Length: 107
Length: 119
Image (cartoon, rainbow over all chains, first blue to last red; front, top):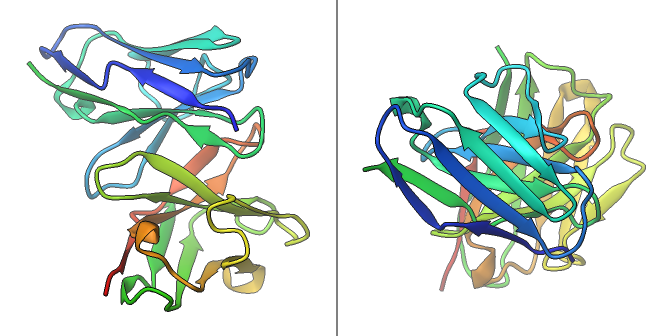
């Protein structure tokens, strides 16, 4: 199965700053990568698909990039509601697999 | 409002069984693949199982194959996960999630239901 590796495990950022999260696939997944936001006690939220296309309800401060094996999620200016854990997921090959997550917390 | 509401979780001893349910409302259900994804305590997300809209295509993670069975009732907008021979490592929050487009993305999720397997 394809292993998705996210870095860093934790990212400390001040409100209003930019956050850059990385995700690496163990083999090429073309652009079949999605990103999700997870907060305790809430339903996970779908943010990005196709590596760079925002989901319909995702704010435009979220952007994605990458192809092949290297992917990035950028939050341009962190808002209080953005402090959460973010997961990348590949859907190029079964089984679909997720990274281990990057927790974005307040600096 | 879109709503996916899981139920059926609880505490069970190793080797036991549970049946999870997911009730969907406010979204299209019958034409979409539905999925179960779990998150063990302090761990990341793990895809568990998928079922196509017509129930003709079922998929399972190797970790649950032969022990879990996914099913759905489109007339009742409901998804199920029958879990047998439960192991301690099955302890997790179990989420139902709708498969959106492109195939493979999970566009709507529930809040999850907790399954604890312990003696």
